[in-house]
Amino acid sequence: MDQQLTTSAAQIASFLKDHDDILCVSHYDCDGISSAVIVREMLEREDKQFDQVFLDELTEEKLASVVTDHDHETVLLTDFGSGQLPTVNTVLDHHDVAIIDHHEPSEDGTLEHHCNPHLVGIDGGSEISGAGMTYVVARELDQANIDLSPYALIGATGDMQRDGDTYQGLNQEIVEEAQKHDHITIKQGLKLYGRRGRNLVKALTYTTDPYLSGITDNESGAVQFLRSIGIELSDENGEWRSLADLSLEEERMIVNGLIKKGYGDIEQLIGSVYILDNGWEIREFASLMNACGRLDRPADGVTIAREDDFDLAATIKRKYSRKIGRYLSFVEDNMDDTEVIQEIGPGTLIQADDSIHANMIGTIASICIRSDILDDPIIIGMAHKGEDAIKISARASSEVTETGLAMSELMETCCTTVGGEGGGHERAAGGKIPRTEQERFIKVIREELTESLSKDTLTHQA
Ligand code: C5P
Ligand code: C5P
Ligand code: ZN
Image 1 (cartoon, rainbow, N blue to C red):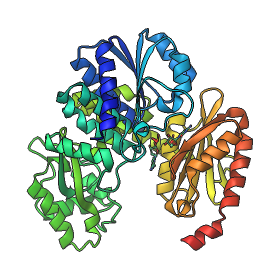
Image 2: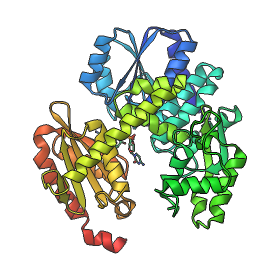
Image 3: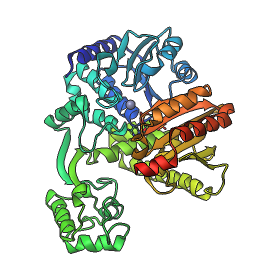
Image 4: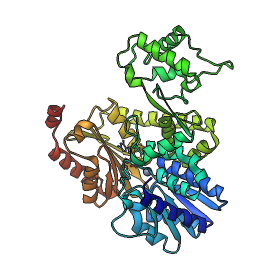
């Protein structure tokens, strides 16, 4: 592993050894929760006293409020902090502070105990996550913490750092380390979504890519198929079996059965499957952690991870899909209401106000861009956040980014123009603006979009 990075991680490890009574503050998303699991385990193993809290964003008010509520001299921030150095230095002026993060560091402000890949020339956007950085520190603290390596990969997966079937850079080094020590199993298998969390019939009927005619969306067809190739649908206790319950031989029988049925694109369904010790496939577990965060229950994510609490996992999944269902109905029910669903150049804007929670507007925008609910190449979601702000989430299809228009730049430009802030990735970006600037923001983004790309350019591109 990179020498400069391990040196920086070792510094944080010794900082943690020298301090006790620590307030650990983590970001509330999958990566933040995964970093928090690592923090908890490593500090418990060192017999440290600590409290753990989560925030959806690191603002002065929110940080000040958690440090007032939890009176500790030492604060450890994971999966955020690097981009908010002035905030950290102002609010935590009288604290001993360490940051472990992978976001771009702020240009102004410095911090003595700051572990970030960008500071040693490594890309924190694609090569390592916040949980990955926390893992590197944990391993410097004690080699025995290698068993926490899967959480580094869960975090990377949640932050979309997985590229098809593989990981890059430091993430790939961690994959190899986790595999070598038997903390993760990688096998060639069926990439059905819901290896652990769905029964076999559901996992098959929900498969839309490729479309399995006669099985997709067809429960009795799926049952018939499985029976015809000799797969038992339930176990000896009468419980439905999931793909994770099948033997390697049975999994092969399904693959061969699908091939025999003549599905052409079946190779899309076969590939590297990363399986955690608890039997979950890594993407499935990452989306469960993401759901915990979006439901504002990040601590439940930590509990599920540490205690293999599958009942709690089932509750979270149920609540999350109900919530998504409700929000999608809101979008569909208001399709003709031009206040709610507005056309802006080549895209669609969802003005949800209080009807969609700010933490979920990004998820809804992502679903809309992937599905045909709003059949548009750009989706901008807006929802009220707190008393005075509006949260914005922008998502674009690849045909948009191929024209050179990046959502990160669009958000940064449009949000800062109206006194807010924004950024993110090419296809997924976000921002926050003052509530009073709603109309001006819509005007600005409409102009930007209409100027940079017309529907014609896109049609010609496609
Ligand atoms: O970097 P930010 O970490 O906070 O990313 C969070 C969200 O951005 C993810 O939940 C995902 O929906 C979206 N994302 C994406 N594609 C990427 C990167 C992020 O859809 N390449
Ligand atoms: O919240 P959402 O999922 O829409 O975020 C998508 C991306 O936009 C994330 O990578 C996030 O870090 C980024 N973002 C940002 N500034 C904000 C809000 C989101 O850079 N104020
Ligand atoms: Zn992260």
